[in-house]
Length: 287
Ligand SMILES: Nc1ncnc2c1ncn2[C@@H]1O[C@H](COP(=O)(O)OP(=O)(O)OP(=O)(O)O)[C@@H](O)[C@H]1O
Ligand SMILES: [Mg+2]
Image (cartoon, rainbow, N blue to C red; front, top):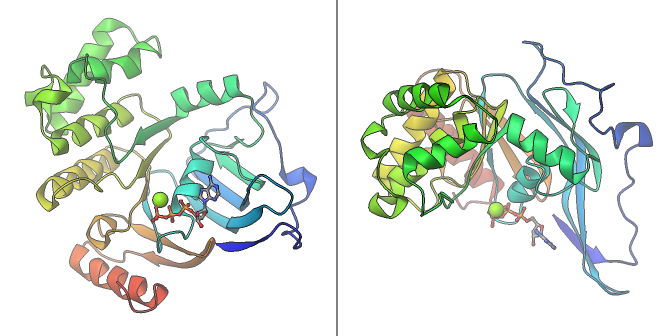
């Protein structure tokens, strides 16, 4: 991340041909096993504060990386390095200043609000730090809502929810309301809700941030199970333990990709040690 006065020159933008390819019938999503689920191409994000001499912040500078189908990838980096900004640009919550974000082969940059809302519903699943469950609905109903808005038949909804809840170990709380269950259980219900509609990509921003270590481990095991069932997951975290559940980590520093680490074996503790070492190097000695 760089901060400068608005009179200073800005990063050059990528060429017009790399920008603004809205979803249209002539640009359908292509499905191919070899095609990455996510391709971030040369993404930059500049925030400008209002006013003639407003501060300009380069939160992201020319970020390029991809996530393959079936991967579980973590994004790490010091506070202010651009993790949430990157996730927001990928999740359609925010728009990059330049660059392309291809999800399932479709560039989401430049889509209008209606296209984005349909795209989010059909292609993406979300898990935030706060589970965002609706308190007036049971856990079952919270999950069902995701399928109802996709017009899934009621019988299929029931079969699917019970199957997922069994496999992801939350069947015992389906009939409870969110205020009747623990924070960890809420996050696991939110994880089931994110994956139940078979999205192309699940995005999680610090999903274990408000959990104790035991509940965090249970949520990460849920993520592992979802990943084993075929979900592709991109998770922002500052916690090396959470990150060690991933297969690959993309480290950001000052808005650029500083390093990537790939897990070479099933040994999670060895990957954890590598992550701690890289974090310490990137943060200048603070793990
Ligand atoms: N809406 C905004 N307006 C102006 N600057 C912003 C805005 N959002 C983020 N920034 C700046 O962009 C940079 C990246 O912020 P971001 O929230 O992406 O960091 P982060 O890596 O998620 O940090 P943390 O670990 O603390 O959550 C920071 O310098 C931040 O102050
Ligand atoms: Mg953040």
